Image 1: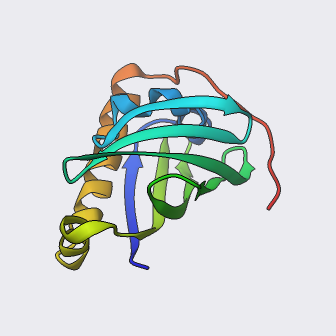
Image 2: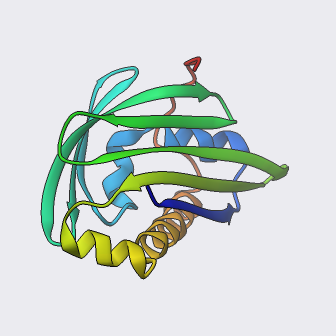
Length: 151
């Protein structure tokens, strides 16, 4: 399974970056391939994504979540298989390093070729850059969920 690791530094406090990342329904504003996310409960979401021109649906389960530190998930059922973690590192009072690590199983020829040429890594880097523009442009989060989920 290919692994993608990308990082971006955002000019907001760690709490603001983390809080925004817990607002899954806002992801279509900065994740290019995400069509919609519906929050089912505190640890489950239904995702609709468009990858390589194909629309896919899957549920995701939050497997670990600790405020201002990390959000980890895995897909459950649906058309795609992946897992990942996003971590938040306070660099100073107003700067946070956001790191995304994603393990995914490419489906179909286009995704497999894309994985070979690093398209997934480029997409994640672009999404993190979009997150940076979104959160810095707003100057604050759209909401927050500060609950803990233990692995």
